[in-house]
Image 1 (cartoon, one colour):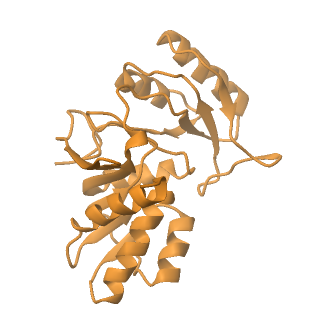
Image 2 (cartoon, rainbow, N blue to C red):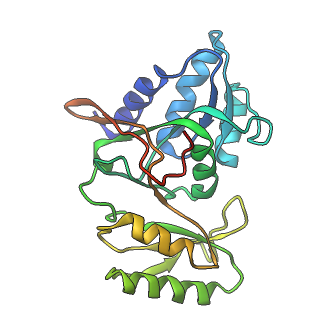
Length: 240
């Protein structure tokens, strides 16, 4: 199967976890889009769900396809979130944010009792970091924040370029009005230490390390579907 077919297959398996009446967080990105299309078919056939989208793009697709939506303020506790990932390791630690929605994705995931990640097997890694880590920052003092992030990286023996994400000739702007720095560290042996250090930088709004949030990962490959499970890690954002 090609990459699109693998994404569809992972989305199809994830849909089996969605029960009638569920309060559902809906992710952002190409794999999440396939899930939305399949979900819309079930809704059209009578399934009752209410979704909280993690981006304006996802909201637009859901409305176009007839998936009922609410805001997280209207429905602050969710049963399940289904989302994609840019990288997944064997502990279900993730890198997310390639689509630029990492802040809302993390808020929605943390408000959910469970998070299912859907991806093709190219996203499964032994150690996070092959995909550049998105770091969402406040535009004010951008250069100072970038230097502080570089200092954090150096303290953790992480090297590699940190670049401002661009859209044509202007900085990419998130739904929250922030910029994104993509940090190409290559390998992140201690994601928790990096997460804590980045959160201590005042200009950092959020980062794309999702630790202790995913409970299940559905990984589609040419040899079939692999389902991985994890328990929430101590100190994770998830409330139990």
